[in-house]
Amino acid sequence: MISAAYALTRIAAQRTGNDAPAAQWRALAVLDREGALRIGELAAAARTTQPGMTRLIGQMTDEALVTRSPDPEDSRATVVRITADGRGALTRWRAQLSETLAPLFADLTDGDRAALERTAQVLSERTIDAPFNPSGRNQ
Image (cartoon, rainbow, N blue to C red; front, top):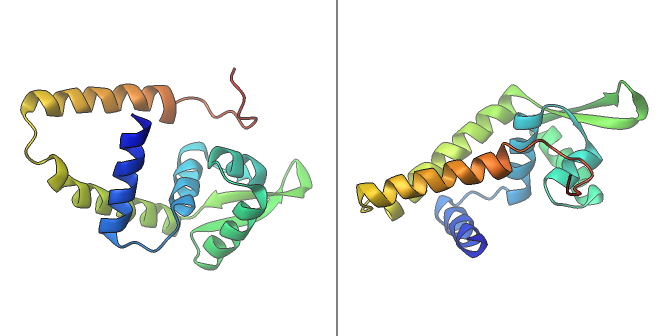
């Protein structure tokens, strides 16, 4: 299942021709779902290093996809929020992915399509919709 998801991600990236790093889309998706997060929390959720996320946030700030501000609870920390432009870019990227991948699944039977939709629903419930755990440890 993981290998298939990786292959699907690779195919989508190649066929869309989108030059943005995958980490950018992961970060925007996390911020869209979770709301404002500290850089360390965002790095953990996006499965990247804190220095790498700091660089990425700098680039995304320059592109007006996110904003940075001091954490109201700890002024030494920085909180990152997705902007309206960031949400728009994420929405367009998701639509582009759907359009790009649709031909791969166009010839599925109704039964196969229903099975994939159910599988996607279960995976979403168990992963994407799971509560965010900044420590990354099992609860």
